[in-house]
Image (cartoon, rainbow, N blue to C red; front, top):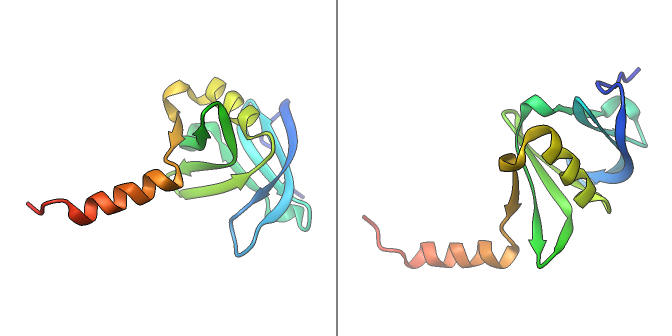
Length: 124
């Protein structure tokens, strides 16, 4: 049986976890101790990320619009999620982990541009 780390939940919403091949639809529980994701198909394959383990969390921002996809970076690796309420999730995360750990990720065009610049950069 899955046991939640949180005693109170600030946000309960649906979303997708991209841990394996394909996405797993499930529920996010955002509380005072952790970000938790419970898949609808098999609740025992849950993901619990304590706020103390989060190195940074970020999403793409275009103007004032925050994308559905967000990434959580920990010492164990990178977790990719999507939710219609990603802005609310990031606001709550900012409250628990601090403003400096909530970052704006580069857009696809910025990533491609950086790759092209690196191709033509002088080697030292």
